[in-house]
Image (cartoon, rainbow, N blue to C red; front, top):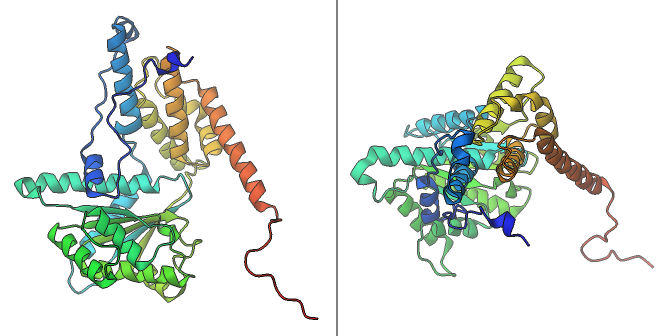
Length: 364
């Protein structure tokens, strides 16, 4: 029944669900390259044998989904902030600097830090030459749910594949991790989902202390990424003040198209995204005709726009139109916006569920 939908499915595509939280998975991400396929005219495309056409479509799918890199001002801002922090940390008499990337869900925070880490490691390995075999320039770990100091350091031990027992002492494990980080010359430590550390809670304070101690014992620069970190309690109390003093905060704001400069930036991003689709009959810069609607419906999230546009490109390839149906793209984003509005409406209603905990005793 679904044979027509699976005819051009990329069954043989390499896995791109990288396990970023292990050194092997991170290395696969760093080294993976999806080349842009050679451009074809419509007559050339139609002249291809069915098998060749399927391979061309697979190459386009890989490139638009994985291989294309859309440069944004936010990504450049992140790169500048991390570079400055890494330079500052070369001074032996200065406190360790770091960077925090914060913004709403779907703003591209994780993509930005992963892209910088990917590029940094590729350049570092290239410059190291034959001596790059034992290098692990970048470490990537997410903050685990219900984190403790030990589970946080365990995540880093697992990234480096450091053997440890379940009952290993925290201090011993911390020492092993910091030693390996020095041996592998780790220069950048990316800690994702940092919004899980609400410093109103004592357990999370201990996690913050563990990360601070790790940063003091290893040469790497710490980069945190999370959702609305200020609102989620990362800057609360004395530990939060220490974090604010040592870290530069980079906010991922919604793209503002109400002024000429902001509209021009948004337009350049959309044109780059359109160009990455490799559609044969797509009129150049046609996407700019709906630039304002794309911005409003996505709330300025290029991640949401990219998802909608790539779905539209796949549909255009399947239907052999080879051009985006911009009305369909807008309709998809409108459905997402409507779903978000429903969720926000549900969350704003007072809860009718009983409160957790013991019921209060009534006096006789």
